[in-house]
Length: 188
Ligand code: FE
Ligand code: FE
Image (cartoon, rainbow, N blue to C red; front, side, top):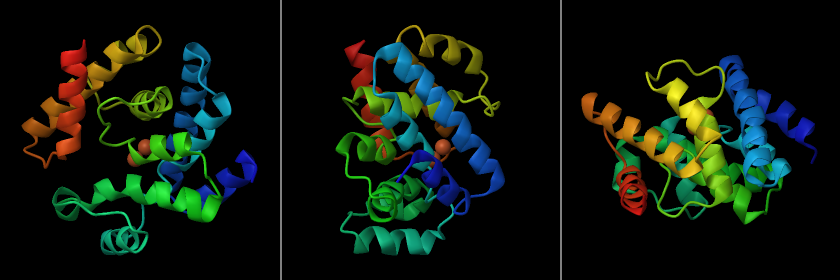
């Protein structure tokens, strides 16, 4: 399937606003791929598909993940919104014919991150945070600059901000978010 065809299909699965976000992630991921020597086509495909399962009702997300043989953790059961990443990877394979493990991994880990991410994982994670439609983070300008300078330091900045935010909001934090942060903080 061509990227254009994927985009048309994704457009029907998500809201207009989310589609704008998706396009922003697509071209930001492409720029980062140029900067760090990743495959720009894989980056674009992962970006286009990363939020395709965002609007599946939460109860169905849990069901469909389990049906697909993806274990649903306690933290995901309490906060099913997290599952859009896992289900996004399932849909990428099932409805878009994606078999490439690098693309599927980048979709799977785009929300929580994880220890020892691949270059493509990092690119999608970062592009999701800095794409041009984003405006909520107080450290966005700094993160955008670091994204094209030092990708691992950029990752740590985002994860730090995320930890602070989730702690302040008293929000549920997926253990993987903390694992990823601990990994990169101590690797620095
Ligand atoms: Fe997402
Ligand atoms: Fe996103």
